[in-house]
Image 1 (cartoon, rainbow, N blue to C red):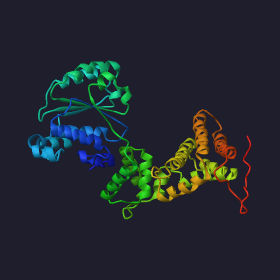
Image 2: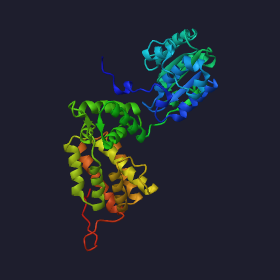
Image 3: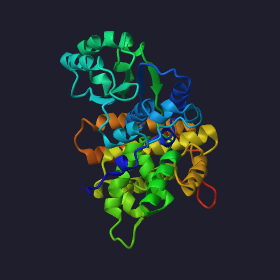
Image 4: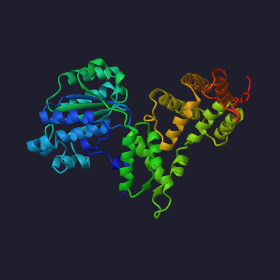
Length: 398
């Protein structure tokens, strides 16, 4: 049997399995209980947060024989049973009541006309034919116009579910005829919990730091997190008798720069130490890390300081506990104004580095300018000598 990737193997088969989208699944389940199923839906949100999965579970539920025939089950469970003929056909991919349509590659007027012809025919089994149109924002203006009449006066047996990552590109004439559901970015804790469950099912040992690193890399997308986990397993699990994922392997595969190096940057600013700053630049360059990526993560590091300044708490800092504690300690060395000025410099540097040569020199220059900003603004508590006098190291002049 061929290998099935994690994202497909553990794809949710019922509403309860869809992570962090309870506001949507609850609304859909209530509409099923009340018999108030609409004819048009728009599912929008970030990639990999469950839009197409929710559409498929919805399509499975509206034709589930047990939900149709058993009012008690419909009221109390409101999930596709997975056992009736309709559900089995759906799971085996042989159901004729669901049509998935890729608007990215079928975006012409002729494609929509063909779809309109098919809509006229009712379901062979069950009550509805469900049309899932993925990446619907890719349809041309003419294609949207051709679809408008069908959406305005659809057959009673047809349900249209449009999935998109770019809601603003859908014409208002289409959007106004549909119920709109916005899928949230999945919180890091929920991603970690899901990945932990997958690792347990796969008989893999994994530590919380590794799961957090994978979750942060996914940036709120469950599918991205599962794909990264697949890659990590292939890289980190070397022997059958040692089925465990270690943080060092994950960091190596994902080309992750440890938080210590970002703290080294802010330490160099607080200590006014250009030598330490150049050591950080040399580490980035010698190890082949991308300078733009380093600056992006350095911006996240600065953001974490601002979070602590403004909330007086690290609850929104997505880092292990010991790193959070370090943010709380180091915040006393700076002030919000200085952090904001460094953020402005880094944002400007990101734009300029894209179009400049001599990356190494310019990257070093950006980091040294952070010390210059610290010199001119003053840190909350400058490095002091044992006698209490301020010990100030000169920064490179430009």
